[in-house]
Image 1 (cartoon, rainbow over the protein chains, first blue to last red):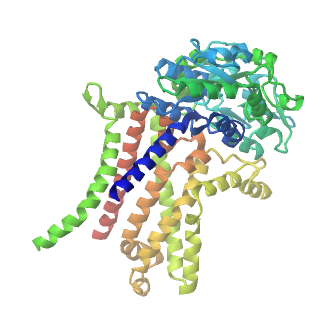
Image 2: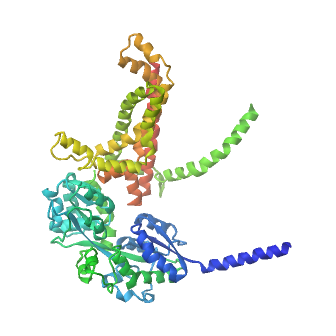
Image 3: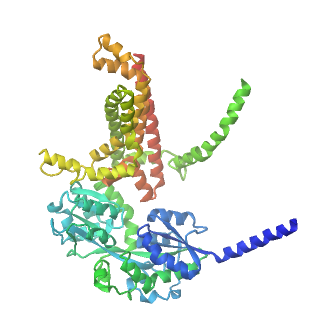
Length: 340
Length: 275
């Protein structure tokens, strides 16, 4: 009797453990932005074909990087998406491993600048965004980055905080408009500091900015194209500036954590995300602009994205190493000159 | 007697261990971060923190705003509490409910409401323009004024609650007695009400001051990065710069300020009563 029930327990345990072996999981670390759409368009369809479960961790870059670093010896996260400069920081800290691009069937379809932005295949670009100035066309006309500090916009403009991804590129473009293209940003930070009283706030989230625009607190602000959808239909006359100095922007990359032991599944997921079908779906939902050059979307969709080789090629981007190497110094100058 | 004490100790022990292991120890480790250097222990992190003009501004701004909120809460709170206590029982309950109602609404929702009310096209500016007090809407959002208003509304109920319960414990006829004996209203307040309600003032003052000092949502939304307070600076140091040393310094400053405020208020209260 006792023997029989022991056997039953043992059999049940054996069954349970073999079931667990089939239950593969992939843990990913992503931005909290648009997660409902990602679940519907990327995660659920992938789970249907991979016979695995995706565990999603979200948060801002610093929180997510801190977690990857804390679990360096025994990685919890298998793949992550980060901005190029955060990814480079993680790579320098030895948290990443090169991605086996030969295993990615969609790799050759990517725009050239997305293929290896960090070097050594440590990251693959999966989306870009342009950064320009969104403005109220009934109140002002903006055709230069220098207009942000003009008397017409005094008291009616918000700028990105230097700690955001839009901050340094916007400052760089303001400098460029004033004739200084050095990446120490000393000149533009000084100019912004002189006009600090004319700037309504230094925003940290684009969602916050959309509300300020809606409430008519501001008439203009630099913003990433991914947020354009929040402005264009707000009932006010909104325009996306094409400044004479050009537009800036940024790229996000996928990375593979070092020694995670789940490389095959992570590669399969990356390939899926980079596929023409998924990149098209994300573009049509206005979630992410495609890095896959074979994606083709309607003119109406394209108008809301950073789309096409021409647009992407014209972006005046700060290199990841420039951002990483200067970040501390920019923050120090900013704290001394702008926010006192 | 000894047996009782032993039992008492035994009863307290689990809670004490729980508090020590799960609260005091982690807090201690976190706070010690700022004193630990590669070569040993030092208070250099604090010196460095206060050397930065920006940090000084943030420190004094926090002290000023929290102090002002506590002071104005006390002044308005005494008037409100006195009025409430002297109402008939039924309307007293209703009025008390009204005062505490804001406490039941999420601070996030309340703060977002202020964002609309204080905005350029908001209620306050509409009235100012309609009354002809200003031609163009004035800027209130993202200034110290906005943070002050938000904090005052958030924490004043705590002061009123403390003062109402203190006044309810005051002898019924103390005020009338003082009036009959010829005291004017100022004397009644200063020599009768204030000494008899000082416990309530100390509790309310500490709650309001500490609350204002450590509030995050209100300064973050209504002040933004141009009106940093210690709590928003702490958050920025951790999430932006991953700088746990500065964060730990700020946490320690906040704790010291909270205890000092409590001690100072107690001191003031006893100083008054011995006179």
